[in-house]
Image 1 (cartoon, rainbow, N blue to C red):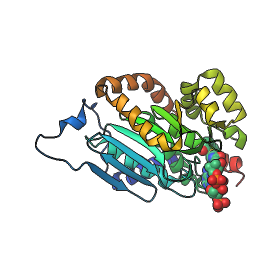
Image 2: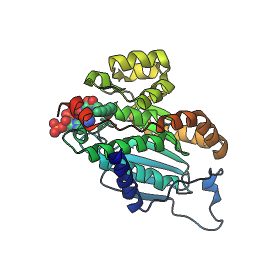
Image 3: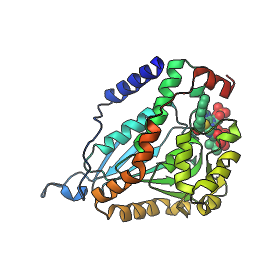
Amino acid sequence: MAAVAAAAGTFARRMARSGVLFPRSSPQVWPQAARQPPGLLPAQRRAFSNNKILVELDTSSGVATMKFKSPPVNSLSLDFLTEFCISLEKLENDRACRGLIITSAIPRVFSSGLDITEMCGKSTEHYAEFWRAVQEMWIRLYGSNLVTVAAINGSSPAGGCLIALSCDYRIMVENPKYVIGLNEAQLGIVAPFWFKDTFVNAVGHRAAERSLQLGLLHSVPEAHRMGLVDEVVPEEKLQEKAVAVMAQWLALPDHARQLTKSMMRKTFRTLSSSHPKTPSRSHFQRTWRC
Ligand SMILES: CCCCCCC/C=C/C(=O)SCCNC(=O)CCNC(=O)[C@H](O)C(C)(C)COP(=O)(O)OP(=O)(O)OC[C@H]1O[C@@H](n2cnc3c(N)ncnc32)[C@H](O)[C@@H]1OP(=O)(O)O
C-alpha cells in the first residue's frame, strides 16, 4: 500500500514537472474553434513533441493528431505512458482543441502493448509506479472530453488494443498482416478486469468471452465483423477517413456530446478506478518468470 502511495506521488510529480494543470473541471462549450477573437489571425498549427510522441494541433479545425514514435514497436513503457498522459492533459487544457486522432509513426505497428521489460526484475516501487501509469493512461483517455479517434495503422495487441478501445471510434487499415485483440491469455496472463470491461463495452459479452479466453488476435476483417473496429480502409485513405469521422463528431455541440459520453462511461469508470490494485512484485515475477 505504501509503495502504491509512493508511486502515485512519483507519477503526480512527473506530471507536475511537465507544467500541466489538471483536472479541467467544467465542460467546454461548442464550438471552441469559432471562439477566436475576431480580427486576430491565430497560428493555424501548433506542435509539441517528446522522444516518444509527436502532437500537432490544427487550431482552425480544433483537431490534434498524436503520433506514437517510439521504436521499435511503440511499447508502453513508463516513460511512454507518462508522456502520453502529459500530452493528453496539454490538449485537454488547450481551448483550441476539441478532437484527437491517435495513430502511429512506426510502420506496421500501432502499439505492441505494455512494455514487457517494465514488468521484469524491477523493484516493488517501480511496479507500483508503472501500474499506476497504466491505469492513469486508461482513466484519462477513456474519460477524455475530447472526441477521440484511433487511426490504427498496424498491429495492436493487448495494451495497444486497450488504447484503441478507449477511443470513441476506431478505424483500421486493411492489411492481412495486421492483428488486434487482447491476447493476454495466450501469454499465460489475465487481462485486468478494466481491460475486459472496455472490451465487452465494444464487442458485447459473448464475443468478448470467446476472444478473451482464447487470447485471440483478430485479423482486420474479423475485428470489423465483431465490432472491435468500426471501419476498415486502405492505408492511403486512413488520414482522410479519420478527419471525416472527426468532422462528423465535431458537428455536434460539445457539451451535449461530452455529457452523453460521460453518462455512458462514468459509472463504469468510477467503479473501475475505485479498485486500483497493483499486482504484487511476486505476481509480476511469477507471471513473467523473471
Ligand atoms: C503481473 C500482472 C501483469 C498483468 C499485465 C496484464 C496486461 C498486459 C498487457 C500487455 O500489453 S502485455 C504485452 C503484450 N504484447 C504482446 O504480446 C505483443 C508482442 N509483440 C508482438 O507481437 C510483435 O512484436 C509486434 C508488435 C506484432 C511487432 O512485430 P515485429 O515483427 O514488427 O517486431 P518484433 O521483431 O516482434 O519486435 C521488435 C522488438 O520489439 C520487442 N518487443 C515487442 N513487443 C514488445 C513489448 N510488448 N514490450 C517490450 N518489447 C517488445 C521485441 O522483443 C523485439 O526486440 P529485439 O528482439 O529487437 O530486441
